[in-house]
Length: 291
Image 1 (spheres, rainbow, N blue to C red):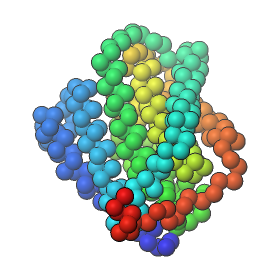
Image 2: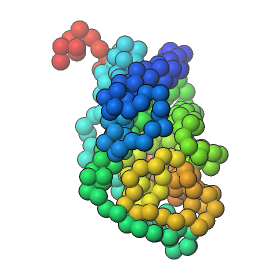
Image 3: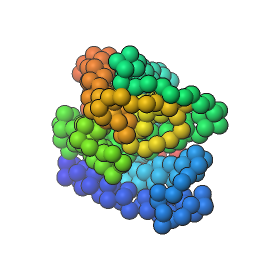
């Protein structure tokens, strides 16, 4: 059991990396973008379409491994409808409060200064769709599949740490990545992971991931080194380790501090002794395939 779970974790990482290539190419062709120029200027709609194809590649990889590797239903990755509304609302609330708090601290500290405000309803909508696909794809892969299988192979602390380090490492190719952004992302992985461990569902992690990225961009920060539509344009006056610099707020020590407080709050909020994820939920059989 332990060995096969580890093999599945390693295998799906390689499979996802390679399966992303054709999905990426198809996305570029559909949007009319040059396949050989990944840095070409894109519209918000084109970014959403590309995000959809990347999300689809992760979704496909997890479906393949859940169906044929684990021999489980896809919903075993954390899609029980129980608690969906409550956990989604809590995730949205936590992500929004965390980013707004960081923004206000930097603003009152004089480390950021708003320059202009430009609200565009269509850009606002596409931004939401973009980060929805990002949140769903990454949470299905890193928490729904990787963390669930790691929990079969080792204890909870190690499973959480390993999945979080893999999550952070997956962003190593992003612009302006560095040591502080790396540990920021590790901590964010722990936030999403601890919620998944307690609830056994992805609603909170997806909602937290979405609101964290969406609100960051709205108030003027880059998101994991990536630029997108911003309602507010900011002028940075502090060092990168304070403001996050070009990587975004999650590249700052302040983000580390806020996430640490949020992690403690989640541990206190959720039940103190979470049960291990079900290792054998509804195996695929001839009868269940007919359902």
